[in-house]
Length: 259
Image 1: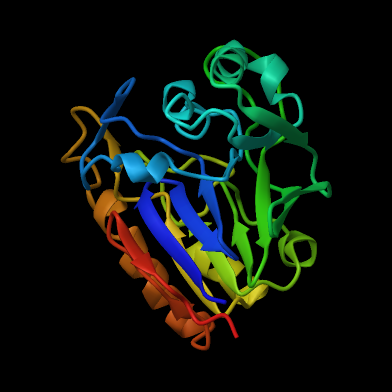
Image 2: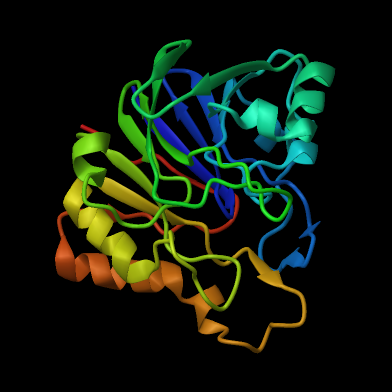
């Protein structure tokens, strides 16, 4: 049974495995505060079609209530434990759309049709910036069906990553950001390649780059917008040439070899 991965831009990915459509961190807007979408058309309506949606953490470019409002009524929504209490907009959307919300801590899992979703740790700021100090730990997720697919969300490189994630065939790894400088708790192309070398998946898909950029900063370190995917591919070829890199365009899909 094949697995299909579609990258819609930023951290928004559809993974179809065993007949189950899993959508990650949906962001379906042309502009978010000071950010604008500089590359790739807005995802089509079909991008919001999902059986289960995974939200990795509370930052507005990952937990975006207006994008969640496009989900079909009754969609299963998996979020970090405490997210519903921390984000009133999430509560309102969940009620309005009758979303079936499941909150997980790292190490917990839930079934979603023919796949199982297991939450894993992420080294990333868990606050709902800039609105308040309350922290809800950021997560990654491992989706287990015909393949084991690791969606890292947003994270820095941490020592226990490979042991906590475990064996995986597909790794969806952030390789950049939405601004000219990456702060603490992020992977750049080099660190993402190091993570992939430790995880040793069959294939890796770079995400979280080349989509959004601050208004007025087009000329500031533009390589940080354009280059991370290609640089990740170059770095990983040096560190772990046995890992296949699928560098997708916006809206592009791939059926990676998982066996």
